[in-house]
Length: 321
Ligand code: F6P
Image (cartoon, rainbow, N blue to C red; front, side, top):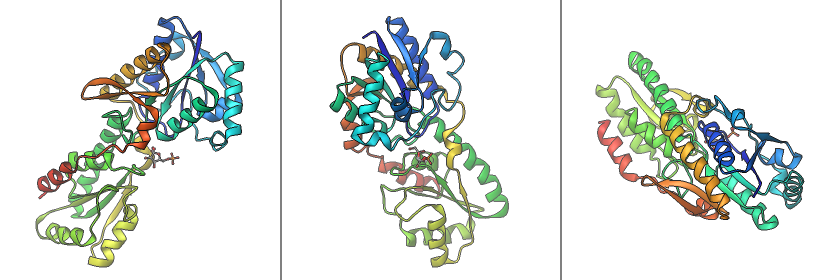
């Protein structure tokens, strides 16, 4: 390969810039040209490509967001869109791709590879941590720390007013953020899509809070089967009469300077993605499992479900007695 492309797609996550930097500099070190494709698959279809030099990625390691911008593209979901993208890649002389994103990004990558033969290696970049084949995705650690700091602040005001708070964190289909942040911020209850959220259990737990606790915090993953924080709070109020406040942390969790763990992971995975692609492999995601870099077929990253640790829920509930 003489020229490869790198792009970010789907929801951004802190550490994507660190991964781009690693890809660009590893590529140059290995003697290939590296092009940045702007705005994910949407930009690929439009041919939004610029060549990146070692200095093009200076001073981005510590920055949140993605210098390449990101997008979700409906056009790329159709065969015609992918054919346009493949034609643009050919015209620009791009012979292989490094895709940084989540399951939607990888599904697009596999379709492009199967229809047009473009070699692709994926790097897991999403705050949700919901990809099989890696213990952590890039951005997850930063998002959990951001949410934890926010909940610490909510705890101050909750305690002063002796209030019950529902705090909604991101996680459309998974409770990884909610579980970690619930445990590390001492939440009284954690509602996640992977386990049943029981209104009666919540009701009796809150009775206890009224007896001898000055505040209570319920962390709710946005994808919980009972609904988000507003819906869950209303259901519990209807059943128990408890007053409450709701705070939805939302996109705050997607921004900010990446933590050291995210920068480290992004640097290792960015480097390995390029060496893997240049070795002739394709349709693989680079990840880290038990501290070791591993390669997983892209398809498995969304077809196999990464399991949460149910033991953590029990620990959280015991420790918040
Ligand atoms: O997949 C990452 C994520 O942040 C989810 O947690 C969240 O549900 C979704 O993206 C939000 O997407 P958007 O930025 O398009 O509103």
